[in-house]
Picture 1: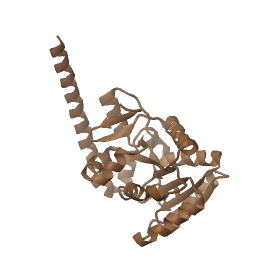
Picture 2: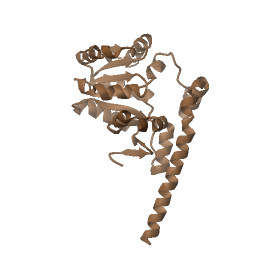
Picture 3: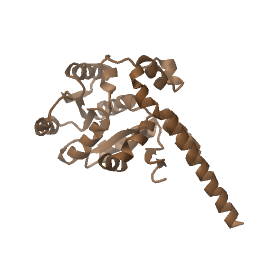
Picture 4: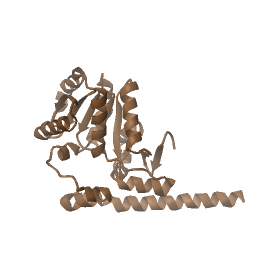
Length: 258
């Protein structure tokens, strides 16, 4: 474990709770000299990140990998014996907005459909009075539009950038353009979070979230997610196998020592 970062099969996760993750973001904003990325780490990443060298490099260099899924929380417990808190990226955006408001930092929101983007910015501004939305852009820009988008982000003075392009597009976007961001110190990739903020997709009721069953609620509401979530049992099986291997290695080591 390096600085709280744990290896889970072929990916990583940071052993942080909501408070520590927020403290790190605050440090990035107060002391950072470059864009620091905040990615979500969950079981689905195990089956996408290692297959893509560019994506793998982005995750390996990430500044903060949130334990986004309950599967990661359980894996950390099984492999390292640590109890960590689930920190959903869809909720952590609010922590960052709260920090931005308190520190007087502007945010730029990039991604999703135009109407969803606009509505989400309205909701965030209402939820956090005093939060400065420095700029926004929908996620349907073409490659030739990127220079203008980067110019808008830079001239806006925003130090926080939310990128909602879906994974892995958003992480790769950060990897490609991070060196062109002049003032931004924190970039959070938030997937479809703007859809929930803007109201086009409903989040699970509090009961389901409290019992770590949001994934099941979303599966019932959106059966098409079955293709993505069918990897969850496989992830659990692979983690179990890794635990068995660790125990066998430990037992072998004790045998040699005796």
